[in-house]
Image (cartoon, rainbow, N blue to C red; front, side, top):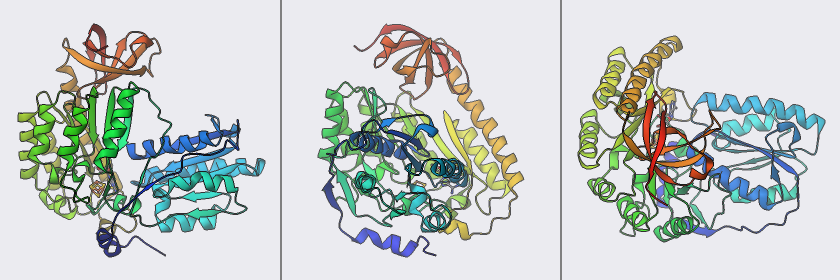
Amino acid sequence: MNLPDLCIARDRIKKEIKYQNVNTKFSPLFKDKKYFLRTYGCQMNVHDSEEIKFYLEALGFVPTDTLEQADIVVLNTCAIRENAKDKVYGYLGRCKHLKKLNPNLIICICGCLVQQPHEVETLKEKHQYIDIIIGTHNLNELPELIMKKMPKQTIEVYSNSDIVFENVKYKRDSKVCAWINITYGCDKFCTYCIVPFTRGRERSRKMENIIQEVQELKNNGYQEVTLLGQNVNAYGNDLNLGYDFATLLEKVAQTGIPRIRFVTSHPWNFTDKMIDVIAKYDNIMPYIHLPIQSGSDAILKKMNRRYTIAEYKELFHKIKAKVKNVAVTTDIIVGFPGETDADFKATLDIVKYCEFDNAFTFIYSPRVGTAAALMPDETPKEVKEEKIKELNNLVNSYSLKSNQALLGKTVPVLVTEISEKDNTKVCGYTDTMKLVNIEGGKDLIGKIIDVEITAAKSFSLDGIPKIKVNN
Ligand code: 5AD
Ligand code: SF4
């Protein structure tokens, strides 16, 4: 079996990166045929799905939310934890049944799951009804593959890529907030993580292309851009053009787009220059997602995270001191191989110390081919489940506390859509990325308004509009 190989993967940084424009013109051969698309995983996948939607609609397909009505099913998959994979296999079972009823149905699977050779082997052997298996590095080939209507399963997965595609078009989900890729891949090789294998080497888009994209979005009325990368602060390292993430962030801020966010930051190379730029510009939102993963130095070392708790604390204080009103959120893994009760207690301690505005918590899930998958892991599942419950209770108490601190205050909110919970209300996010349900109609969507906070829960706020700030 062809497993991810760390040595080959590490060697990849020696090759030159190429920039290539993609073809964006297709004939509507499938006019009014229906597509059903499901997306799993991170923002990167959500944004890739916006690219997939562009291709499908350029080919003439229209969206459907009913699997049974679909002429093509596309599953954009995630590989980060085992449960993400389980969900995909659940859908595949239903697809297999539908394909028996309708042999013309096209079934396509893409995303991180299929970047793992052993997963492709399983799909090849046990799921032959799948028509197209396409990787994360060559999504732009999807339209050609669909047009070919292959007689048998077609697999187009490249294990590595030195290409950055430019001129990519998207069917964006929102007219208010937009994702912008700034880097692809990751070279950090945290020992638990599959991303450096599924998404390939770290490669940056050129600054002028990113700025042009921001400018176009701003001209089209977008209020917010989120700069996307597995590790945004590594931006520019591979380019050797003398600029870094701080330079890019400053240039994006100078376009005057009302709101700028970025995910995800790695604590290891979060520079003082970055903090200064974030503090300097009002349109860079005071919100930083800064994954800590564990509170124990011994575990951080085994994870290959490249920082100690003392260093994380130092960075945390610098950010809090310089960026006014900043909210910091984090990711935490529970039950990494060899995690002792004392290590877990250290994680609880750092949560108490930092009082994170929010934290995404995960039980460690071994990924085939990663270094951690070979480490002995003796903690029973039930113990890990108990630990994560305890951690979640603590994390939620601080989320509630930070939300309650806003009660009675007036905060700026970018209204993005009709509220999911109550369609007589709208919702949006504060500058610090807190979800607010607001009394008001859809005329508020796309506006940044002042909202008085009237209720605070762990995961959301309620509010009423006050004076309009913008527009
Ligand atoms: N098991 C559990 N959680 C993981 N993450 C990444 N890989 C794993 C894994 N194998 C978590 C990390 C990361 C977030 C996106 O997912 O916390 O920051
Ligand atoms: Fe995975 Fe670590 Fe890269 Fe994040 S920085 S994508 S956790 S390897």
